[in-house]
Image (cartoon, rainbow, N blue to C red):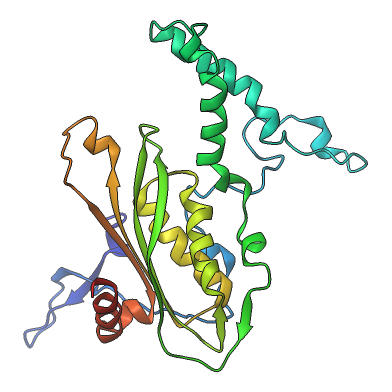
Length: 266
């Protein structure tokens, strides 16, 4: 019975006389309890797969970098501009592997252009929530729903390195603190400008808003079009992917969740 005791409980059955027979029943699942306040630990809000920003000594490729461990030197990983030459060489090799001539006129500057474009597409790796919020959290006696919808989003599928794009809608219930409205769009930019999965992106945005203002609840809905489904594979050009993350009151209260969804889809 090893391991079973964690999932089941033994219940004695009596029929008027001592009976040693037992049956196994499943324990009921515990009710979900969400504590949505200032005592939330950072580890409770971490999303697996979230890159650490900005780059540090733990960033891949810098594990053995001696300068990171010398406090007398102000050493940081290479700037994004410093990565362009190496990335340019990689794109040039890619063109050659495809059977193209990287030296012909039309492709002569393509590797460098592609390198700069990729750095722009993934600029979110060098942005942090603290930098973007920039003290735009305001004390305000407001506890009604705040919704910003139809925020344009562009990202890169981490499975095929092709784009996916769409719209993001964010709602939250303030607890005496509100966030500058433009900062919600900037939070979307931080996490969408990385190699992503739409499911992970949805949760990262919700958790970032939670970290910023500690609201009573956060809701995020993303509707996306994935070029990896449109240009290749099943090639379904009209397909859309909808993902949502509901935290706090939005998850626990069906009426609040319904109000948000009605506002988003109105």
